[in-house]
Image 1 (cartoon, rainbow, N blue to C red):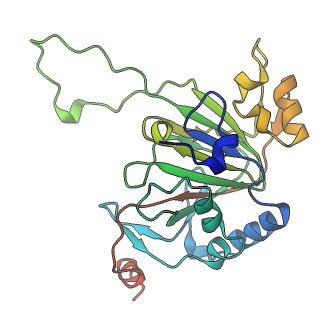
Image 2 (cartoon, helix red, strand yellow; image 1 turned 60 degrees about the vertical axis):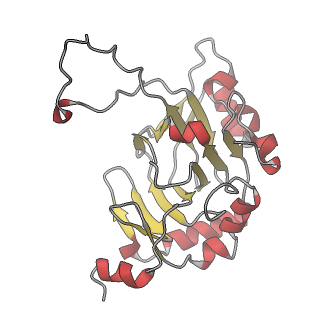
Length: 267
């Protein structure tokens, strides 16, 4: 895909498909968004093993079709995250031209998320806004497939086949500062996995590497403490972090919220 002009300067060095935009919102907007997230009705939230999450914009069916719901004002009016993300041009190739589905996540220190793919239900672009605290965001790739079995060896039954093995060494590491937006597109979205280690403290080992080798977006970091920790091999303590993960679900039903309420037993 071509690079939107609005994002050219934010391309992460060494990549062609990943962008890091520091200070995508200001501190006042960040405080407002956190307040809205914290005040969200408790039924919105699902307490997962490694974090808490809530969905904005509707639920996905088993067939990965979005049953849409109206977006709350804090994402499509002030501070108009949907509009700002649309204006970057990154969703120009998607069906709806902008995100129509947002997952709110809450990560306490020590929480993270295992390496995973977002899957084909979405246009291959995801934009994630970080709020409240930093984290280190890792991208992974699958290990090469095992050599093919000899031609006279019968194939294993489907039930005996296991999932693909993941190389535990990240191919890319980004430090996501509060108020920053990270955008993952194209092959980095479709062919790689991403995750956050379950840590209370991020340690940056020098080991003969440069700051840019330790954290790919080092040159774009704005926080002096973060830059110093990465550069000198220091540590950063994690705090309570919220994120808004914005994507475009390609298939949308026209039924809307009435069907969603029926499925959830809220008639």
